[in-house]
Amino acid sequence: MPEPDFDRMLERHRRELQVHCYRMLGSFTDAEDLVQETFLRAWRARDRHEPGSNLRAWLYRIATNACTDVIRSRRRQVPAGGGTGGGGTGGGGPAEVSWLQPYPDTLLNQIPDPEAGPESATVARETIELAFITAIQALPPRQRAALVLCAGLGWTAAEAAATLETSTAAVNSALQRARAVLRDRLPRDRAEWTAGPLTAAEQDVLRQFIEVHERGDAAAAVAMMRADIVATMPPQPVVYRGLASMGPLLKLAFAAPEAGGMGEWRALPTAANRHPAAACYLRRPGDTVFRAHKLDVLRVEDGQVAETTTFDAALFPAFGLPGVLPEVPPAS
Image 1 (tube, helix red, strand yellow):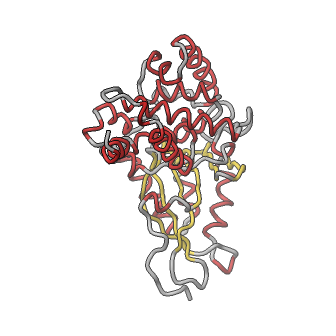
Image 2 (cartoon, rainbow, N blue to C red):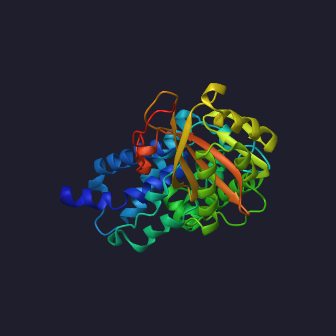
Protein backbone atom coordinates (compact mmCIF):
# COMPACT_ATOMS: atom_id res chain seq x y z
CA MET A 1 0.00 0.00 0.00
CA PRO A 2 1.36 3.47 -0.87
CA GLU A 3 2.60 5.30 2.21
CA PRO A 4 0.31 8.37 1.82
CA ASP A 5 -2.74 6.07 1.64
CA PHE A 6 -1.69 4.24 4.79
CA ASP A 7 -1.20 7.55 6.62
CA ARG A 8 -4.69 8.68 5.66
CA MET A 9 -6.17 5.41 6.88
CA LEU A 10 -4.48 5.84 10.23
CA GLU A 11 -5.65 9.44 10.63
CA ARG A 12 -9.28 8.45 10.17
CA HIS A 13 -9.10 6.62 13.49
CA ARG A 14 -7.13 9.21 15.47
CA ARG A 15 -9.97 10.65 17.54
CA GLU A 16 -11.56 7.38 18.58
CA LEU A 17 -8.16 5.90 19.45
CA GLN A 18 -7.40 8.97 21.56
CA VAL A 19 -10.63 8.44 23.51
CA HIS A 20 -9.76 4.76 23.94
CA CYS A 21 -6.30 5.58 25.29
CA TYR A 22 -7.75 8.29 27.52
CA ARG A 23 -10.17 5.84 29.07
CA MET A 24 -7.35 3.36 29.64
CA LEU A 25 -5.00 5.93 31.20
CA GLY A 26 -7.18 8.74 32.57
CA SER A 27 -4.79 11.36 31.16
CA PHE A 28 -5.46 13.48 28.08
CA THR A 29 -1.75 14.19 27.62
CA ASP A 30 -0.80 10.52 27.87
CA ALA A 31 -3.59 9.60 25.46
CA GLU A 32 -2.19 11.94 22.82
CA ASP A 33 1.26 10.42 23.27
CA LEU A 34 -0.09 6.87 23.07
CA VAL A 35 -1.95 7.55 19.82
CA GLN A 36 1.33 8.67 18.30
CA GLU A 37 2.99 5.55 19.68
CA THR A 38 0.19 3.45 18.19
CA PHE A 39 0.68 5.01 14.76
CA LEU A 40 4.43 4.51 15.00
CA ARG A 41 4.01 0.83 15.85
CA ALA A 42 1.45 0.42 13.07
CA TRP A 43 3.75 2.12 10.57
CA ARG A 44 6.61 -0.16 11.45
CA ALA A 45 4.38 -3.21 11.06
CA ARG A 46 2.42 -2.01 8.02
CA ASP A 47 3.83 -4.74 5.80
CA ARG A 48 2.21 -7.32 8.08
CA HIS A 49 -1.24 -5.79 7.77
CA GLU A 50 -3.18 -7.62 5.09
CA PRO A 51 -5.21 -5.45 2.69
CA GLY A 52 -8.91 -5.95 3.26
CA SER A 53 -8.53 -7.03 6.86
CA ASN A 54 -9.99 -5.06 9.78
CA LEU A 55 -7.62 -2.12 10.21
CA ARG A 56 -9.67 -0.67 13.07
CA ALA A 57 -9.45 -3.83 15.16
CA TRP A 58 -5.72 -4.07 14.42
CA LEU A 59 -5.16 -0.49 15.59
CA TYR A 60 -7.16 -1.07 18.76
CA ARG A 61 -4.98 -4.10 19.51
CA ILE A 62 -1.84 -2.00 19.08
CA ALA A 63 -3.24 0.88 21.15
CA THR A 64 -4.42 -1.40 23.94
CA ASN A 65 -1.04 -3.11 24.15
CA ALA A 66 0.73 0.26 24.16
CA CYS A 67 -1.48 1.51 27.01
CA THR A 68 -0.95 -1.72 28.94
CA ASP A 69 2.81 -1.27 28.61
CA VAL A 70 2.55 2.25 30.08
CA ILE A 71 0.35 1.14 32.98
CA ARG A 72 2.72 -1.66 33.90
CA SER A 73 5.89 0.39 33.49
CA ARG A 74 4.62 3.23 35.63
CA ARG A 75 2.91 0.92 38.10
CA ARG A 76 0.11 3.39 38.59
CA GLN A 77 -2.23 2.17 41.29
CA VAL A 78 -5.19 3.73 43.03
CA PRO A 79 -5.11 3.22 46.82
CA ALA A 80 -7.60 0.72 48.19
CA GLY A 81 -9.23 3.22 50.57
CA GLY A 82 -9.76 6.90 51.07
CA GLY A 83 -12.08 9.52 49.69
CA THR A 84 -14.66 8.57 47.15
CA GLY A 85 -14.64 11.84 45.22
CA GLY A 86 -16.95 10.38 42.57
CA GLY A 87 -19.65 9.62 45.11
CA GLY A 88 -18.88 5.92 45.30
CA THR A 89 -18.93 3.70 48.32
CA GLY A 90 -15.24 2.89 48.30
CA GLY A 91 -11.96 4.48 47.25
CA GLY A 92 -10.78 5.70 43.90
CA GLY A 93 -11.99 9.30 43.77
CA PRO A 94 -10.26 12.03 41.76
CA ALA A 95 -8.18 13.01 44.79
CA GLU A 96 -6.53 9.59 44.65
CA VAL A 97 -5.77 9.63 40.92
CA SER A 98 -3.11 12.31 40.69
CA TRP A 99 -2.65 11.95 36.91
CA LEU A 100 -6.37 12.46 36.14
CA GLN A 101 -7.11 15.06 33.45
CA PRO A 102 -10.37 16.18 31.80
CA TYR A 103 -11.35 15.41 28.20
CA PRO A 104 -12.88 18.25 26.11
CA ASP A 105 -16.42 17.68 24.87
CA THR A 106 -15.54 19.68 21.76
CA LEU A 107 -13.38 16.73 20.70
CA LEU A 108 -15.98 14.15 21.68
CA ASN A 109 -18.50 15.97 19.51
CA GLN A 110 -16.39 15.87 16.37
CA ILE A 111 -18.13 13.79 13.73
CA PRO A 112 -15.94 10.87 12.62
CA ASP A 113 -15.02 10.50 8.98
CA PRO A 114 -17.88 8.45 7.45
CA GLU A 115 -15.29 6.42 5.57
CA ALA A 116 -13.89 5.24 8.90
CA GLY A 117 -17.00 3.10 9.34
CA PRO A 118 -20.28 3.66 11.21
CA GLU A 119 -18.96 1.82 14.27
CA SER A 120 -16.56 4.68 14.98
CA ALA A 121 -19.55 6.90 15.84
CA THR A 122 -19.86 4.99 19.12
CA VAL A 123 -17.03 7.19 20.44
CA ALA A 124 -19.56 9.99 20.97
CA ARG A 125 -21.57 7.72 23.29
CA GLU A 126 -18.71 6.08 25.15
CA THR A 127 -18.58 5.94 28.89
CA ILE A 128 -16.49 9.01 29.61
CA GLU A 129 -17.77 10.44 32.89
CA LEU A 130 -15.07 11.38 35.38
CA ALA A 131 -16.36 9.04 38.08
CA PHE A 132 -16.14 6.08 35.72
CA ILE A 133 -12.75 7.08 34.33
CA THR A 134 -11.46 7.47 37.87
CA ALA A 135 -12.90 4.18 39.09
CA ILE A 136 -11.41 2.03 36.33
CA GLN A 137 -7.92 3.32 37.14
CA ALA A 138 -8.04 0.92 40.10
CA LEU A 139 -8.30 -2.08 37.76
CA PRO A 140 -5.30 -4.18 36.66
CA PRO A 141 -4.35 -3.64 32.99
CA ARG A 142 -6.07 -6.74 31.57
CA GLN A 143 -9.32 -6.17 33.47
CA ARG A 144 -9.30 -2.52 32.48
CA ALA A 145 -8.74 -3.34 28.82
CA ALA A 146 -11.51 -5.93 28.78
CA LEU A 147 -13.97 -3.49 30.35
CA VAL A 148 -13.05 -0.62 28.04
CA LEU A 149 -13.39 -2.80 24.93
CA CYS A 150 -16.65 -4.48 25.96
CA ALA A 151 -18.47 -1.86 28.01
CA GLY A 152 -17.14 1.16 26.15
CA LEU A 153 -16.99 -0.01 22.56
CA GLY A 154 -19.69 -2.66 22.78
CA TRP A 155 -17.42 -5.44 21.56
CA THR A 156 -18.26 -9.04 22.33
CA ALA A 157 -16.06 -11.04 24.66
CA ALA A 158 -14.82 -12.98 21.63
CA GLU A 159 -13.83 -9.76 19.82
CA ALA A 160 -12.07 -8.46 22.91
CA ALA A 161 -10.31 -11.81 23.32
CA ALA A 162 -8.94 -11.57 19.78
CA THR A 163 -7.60 -8.08 20.51
CA LEU A 164 -6.10 -9.10 23.84
CA GLU A 165 -4.81 -12.38 22.38
CA THR A 166 -6.48 -14.47 25.05
CA SER A 167 -9.54 -16.71 25.40
CA THR A 168 -13.17 -15.67 25.56
CA ALA A 169 -13.41 -17.34 28.95
CA ALA A 170 -10.49 -15.25 30.22
CA VAL A 171 -12.17 -12.04 29.04
CA ASN A 172 -15.46 -12.99 30.70
CA SER A 173 -13.58 -13.72 33.92
CA ALA A 174 -11.77 -10.37 33.72
CA LEU A 175 -15.07 -8.56 33.14
CA GLN A 176 -16.66 -10.27 36.12
CA ARG A 177 -13.81 -9.25 38.41
CA ALA A 178 -13.74 -5.69 37.03
CA ARG A 179 -17.46 -5.17 37.58
CA ALA A 180 -17.15 -6.42 41.15
CA VAL A 181 -14.55 -3.71 41.82
CA LEU A 182 -16.68 -1.03 40.18
CA ARG A 183 -19.69 -1.90 42.31
CA ASP A 184 -17.68 -0.71 45.30
CA ARG A 185 -16.37 2.43 43.59
CA LEU A 186 -19.31 3.86 41.65
CA PRO A 187 -22.49 5.42 43.04
CA ARG A 188 -25.11 2.76 43.60
CA ASP A 189 -27.88 4.99 42.23
CA ARG A 190 -26.32 5.20 38.77
CA ALA A 191 -27.48 2.36 36.52
CA GLU A 192 -26.17 3.84 33.27
CA TRP A 193 -22.76 5.40 32.63
CA THR A 194 -23.24 6.62 29.08
CA ALA A 195 -23.47 10.40 29.11
CA GLY A 196 -24.72 12.66 26.34
CA PRO A 197 -24.71 16.37 25.53
CA LEU A 198 -25.45 18.76 28.40
CA THR A 199 -29.09 19.04 29.40
CA ALA A 200 -30.90 22.36 29.69
CA ALA A 201 -30.86 21.96 33.48
CA GLU A 202 -27.08 21.45 33.51
CA GLN A 203 -26.57 24.47 31.28
CA ASP A 204 -28.72 26.58 33.63
CA VAL A 205 -26.72 25.47 36.68
CA LEU A 206 -23.49 26.28 34.86
CA ARG A 207 -24.77 29.76 33.98
CA GLN A 208 -25.64 30.39 37.63
CA PHE A 209 -22.30 28.99 38.77
CA ILE A 210 -20.46 31.43 36.53
CA GLU A 211 -22.62 34.39 37.59
CA VAL A 212 -22.11 33.91 41.34
CA HIS A 213 -18.38 33.38 40.85
CA GLU A 214 -17.97 36.52 38.77
CA ARG A 215 -19.70 38.64 41.38
CA GLY A 216 -17.84 36.87 44.19
CA ASP A 217 -20.95 35.79 46.04
CA ALA A 218 -19.84 32.97 48.35
CA ALA A 219 -23.26 32.63 49.99
CA ALA A 220 -25.01 32.21 46.62
CA ALA A 221 -22.37 29.70 45.52
CA VAL A 222 -22.96 27.60 48.63
CA ALA A 223 -26.74 27.81 48.08
CA MET A 224 -26.27 26.10 44.70
CA MET A 225 -24.61 23.07 46.29
CA ARG A 226 -26.02 19.88 47.73
CA ALA A 227 -25.54 19.33 51.45
CA ASP A 228 -23.24 16.38 50.66
CA ILE A 229 -21.14 18.28 48.09
CA VAL A 230 -17.72 16.76 47.35
CA ALA A 231 -14.88 18.88 45.94
CA THR A 232 -11.50 17.61 44.77
CA MET A 233 -8.50 19.21 43.08
CA PRO A 234 -6.27 16.67 41.30
CA PRO A 235 -3.33 16.20 41.69
CA GLN A 236 -3.77 17.49 45.25
CA PRO A 237 -4.93 14.73 47.65
CA VAL A 238 -7.29 17.06 49.53
CA VAL A 239 -11.04 16.33 49.57
CA TYR A 240 -13.65 18.84 50.76
CA ARG A 241 -16.91 17.30 51.93
CA GLY A 242 -20.13 19.08 52.82
CA LEU A 243 -21.22 22.68 52.95
CA ALA A 244 -19.34 23.31 56.18
CA SER A 245 -16.04 22.80 54.37
CA MET A 246 -17.02 24.63 51.18
CA GLY A 247 -18.14 27.87 52.87
CA PRO A 248 -14.73 28.92 54.21
CA LEU A 249 -13.03 27.85 50.98
CA LEU A 250 -15.29 30.03 48.84
CA LYS A 251 -15.11 32.98 51.21
CA LEU A 252 -11.34 32.96 50.87
CA ALA A 253 -11.47 32.65 47.07
CA PHE A 254 -13.96 35.52 46.75
CA ALA A 255 -12.52 37.79 49.43
CA ALA A 256 -11.41 41.30 48.49
CA PRO A 257 -7.65 41.65 47.87
CA GLU A 258 -7.22 43.78 50.98
CA ALA A 259 -8.76 40.92 52.96
CA GLY A 260 -6.37 38.36 51.53
CA GLY A 261 -8.44 37.42 48.49
CA MET A 262 -6.93 36.20 45.23
CA GLY A 263 -8.46 38.83 42.96
CA GLU A 264 -11.37 39.10 40.49
CA TRP A 265 -12.85 36.19 38.57
CA ARG A 266 -14.26 35.76 35.08
CA ALA A 267 -15.37 32.46 33.55
CA LEU A 268 -16.35 30.96 30.22
CA PRO A 269 -18.79 28.03 29.83
CA THR A 270 -17.46 24.79 28.40
CA ALA A 271 -17.89 21.05 28.92
CA ALA A 272 -15.63 18.15 29.85
CA ASN A 273 -16.35 14.43 30.06
CA ARG A 274 -20.02 15.18 29.33
CA HIS A 275 -20.15 17.42 32.39
CA PRO A 276 -20.72 21.20 32.49
CA ALA A 277 -17.49 23.04 33.21
CA ALA A 278 -16.39 26.60 33.93
CA ALA A 279 -13.07 27.84 32.55
CA CYS A 280 -12.05 30.31 35.23
CA TYR A 281 -9.76 33.31 34.74
CA LEU A 282 -8.21 35.31 37.58
CA ARG A 283 -7.13 38.94 37.56
CA ARG A 284 -4.77 39.41 40.45
CA PRO A 285 -4.42 42.80 42.17
CA GLY A 286 -2.59 45.26 39.92
CA ASP A 287 -2.90 43.11 36.78
CA THR A 288 -4.75 44.33 33.69
CA VAL A 289 -5.87 40.95 32.27
CA PHE A 290 -7.70 37.89 33.46
CA ARG A 291 -5.33 34.92 33.12
CA ALA A 292 -6.30 31.26 32.74
CA HIS A 293 -6.30 29.78 36.23
CA LYS A 294 -8.47 26.66 36.62
CA LEU A 295 -11.18 24.45 35.14
CA ASP A 296 -14.12 23.57 37.42
CA VAL A 297 -15.94 20.45 36.22
CA LEU A 298 -19.39 20.06 37.78
CA ARG A 299 -21.60 17.08 38.44
CA VAL A 300 -25.21 18.23 38.70
CA GLU A 301 -28.00 16.36 40.47
CA ASP A 302 -31.56 17.66 40.76
CA GLY A 303 -30.55 21.18 39.82
CA GLN A 304 -27.74 21.45 42.36
CA VAL A 305 -23.98 21.02 42.24
CA ALA A 306 -23.23 17.60 43.73
CA GLU A 307 -19.51 17.54 42.97
CA THR A 308 -16.75 19.77 41.67
CA THR A 309 -13.45 18.57 40.28
CA THR A 310 -10.97 21.39 39.80
CA PHE A 311 -8.08 21.08 37.34
CA ASP A 312 -5.36 23.55 36.44
CA ALA A 313 -5.40 25.49 33.17
CA ALA A 314 -2.83 23.36 31.35
CA LEU A 315 -5.38 21.93 28.89
CA PHE A 316 -7.13 25.21 28.01
CA PRO A 317 -5.65 25.07 24.46
CA ALA A 318 -7.16 21.59 23.95
CA PHE A 319 -10.55 23.07 24.89
CA GLY A 320 -10.06 25.91 22.41
CA LEU A 321 -9.91 28.40 25.28
CA PRO A 322 -7.73 31.55 25.31
CA GLY A 323 -4.91 31.94 27.79
CA VAL A 324 -6.01 35.46 28.75
CA LEU A 325 -9.16 37.53 28.47
CA PRO A 326 -9.10 41.11 27.10
CA GLU A 327 -7.40 43.84 29.06
CA VAL A 328 -9.50 45.84 31.48
CA PRO A 329 -8.65 48.79 33.72
CA PRO A 330 -6.99 47.60 36.91
CA ALA A 331 -9.06 47.67 40.08
CA SER A 332 -8.65 50.89 42.05
